[in-house]
Amino acid sequence: MGETSILPIIALKILRKKAILLLAGSIPNGLIQKKDPLKNLNVLLARYGYFLSDYIILYSRGLIEKWCLQDHAHKILIAHRHFLDFESFTATAPLPRRPPLIGYIGRLSREKGVRNFVQALHTILSDGQNLDVLIGGNGPLKESIKTSLQEEGLTARVDLPGWISHDDLPRYLNQLRLLVLPSYTEGLPNIMLEAMACGTPVLATPVGAIPDVIIDGKTGFIMGDNSPECIAENVIRALNSPDLEQIADNGRRFVEDNFTFERVVERWKEVLEEI
Image (cartoon, rainbow, N blue to C red; front, top):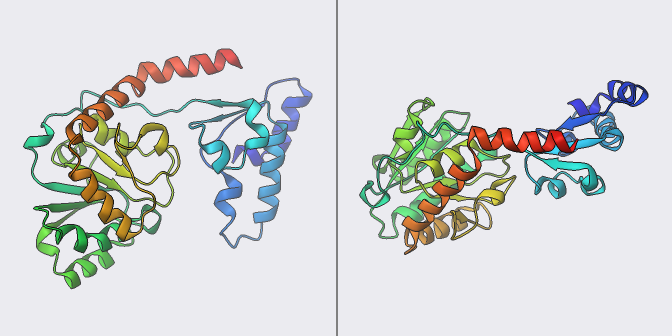
């Protein structure tokens, strides 16, 4: 909400200090669908905040267009805060030796597209694939997901372990042959990076900063949208890829090169020196 803090920004300008906005989200985009009586005021304040700031720091260049910041592109710098513990998140099971298991891990809510994934399972599991499914996490859709699985007769092939602790995540990720992230909206999802570090290929929608990390057929798989039909088609495509093991290895090496603590510190040092 710093971009709406117009008085502090003006005070910095008067004192000839630099006003730097570090954006974790977009107020105009976030409020566009909400019935908030102060929506128009907050959107106006945010836009003035963007205009008055000296620099805006984003975690992905792709967010410039998504958050309608093209007019401020000249003062935007890119740096993210994401780094991994590679002692915990590491590939302990080679992909070919893993059980025939695909999965989703995350919040069970609409914006994550998990209901669409559940609706795609009938097609995925009836396509001759010898597969089981893991859906890990809690959220408002948990009961409706259970009901859908019962109605489709899929409960025997889908494990719903509930919330998975961060300490247990590497063990679960090292069981999967494919992690599916069918989100409507994302920033830079940690679960994607953690899966890739564990040598687990990821299939995701091209939202937020995901396309900065996943290049289709190179470091993972991208699907055009998150409709059940598209999810099913792309899950089968990914699992049948002759390069699946190489793609998983490419993804693992990508996050190891770009998401260490040292690399994050190095990038922030570059940004601060530029400012």
